[in-house]
Image (cartoon, rainbow, N blue to C red; front, side):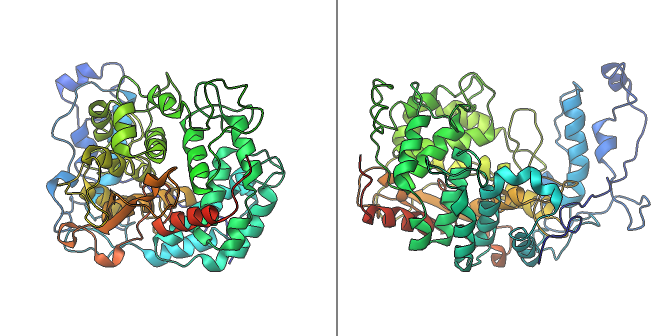
Length: 508
């Protein structure tokens, strides 16, 4: 069924009614000059329940089983009031009714932990619709067509759907986006870009099969990647485009999944002295992207960002074992400090930058950093069958699961940034990926299915479900485990790599 504008992607929620009261003397002094625009935290967040008719009523009790941490504002409060703190207060006022399970816009049932069920059927309908016709207004997304395919396929796969029946549709959609000079553009006739090429390759991996794998012209892809390689070790995202850690990650994913040669293509060796391989200097480039805060920026000297942190850590985990590559190229204590500060209470979700708001998509971009860092801390794996003996977790699985299931589910299907926002395919994909990350423990083994040494450690990952006794969600809401580096199922990544290993090598 074609997607109808206004049915799924254009939903707005009314803000909860807030009670107000006079500010204290200290707050009036602190907010001198703009006290009319700001309310203190208690009055903004204290009573926010409403009746179905919209009138105010006494504050409702939270659903049973919800710890106080997730039902009230932080007990410590910086007295400095800024535009940023006002936005954070407004976000809390929207999230708390959902976290407490008392919002009229929220669907149940709620389990014994006060967590609502995953509305699987609604989200499946939304994602299948997202693979059909779009309204005219979506023409602005034309250059993101491979991404829209990937987001929908990934979301469906996470919820256990078999996407192989979509194989021919995916192949025929992506075929005209592949350029004779290598790589995939965002649409027919558009310039090749590493981001759209990454999404195209992962989409082909998920639908699988020889027909899908054979679509990729590996030789021109290799030559095109050589043109993107820079003399400081990094990659541009397209010819003449910007250089950043997205390019590094996307290029490494493509090279490793397609089993491309590491040698520089003809003509590039003389242009990039000292960089005889596509991977030369790449880890050092990523190291220069770590900032004074401890996070990782898009390029050296820029602001630290959660999505760039994942790209850098995943790229390093492709280049070699995390206990070697991450540990030797990142200041781990500083990185741990910065990443830990991205998870907020009471929301439980992640923000992408310092002093920014929680956003459902960082459930993946920040949440998927943790298994990579955990692997770096665990050191060399002991065996192929036994998972690491890691105790506990580096982040709150409960907090993230509560935020996703309570705040990110849109009542008409799809998942979103936070209450009051629209659902979209991007957030649906990455919020579900984050939920999956809370439900599985990922770990490396000392064996790999790859016959070749290059990148073998990237394919040595396995997963096991988390302990049901510690989970706050129902076991029927458990999702498929995704590879922590490739963000597709483990088996899909392995099958693609092994198929190309069995094919004739690209002639250097």
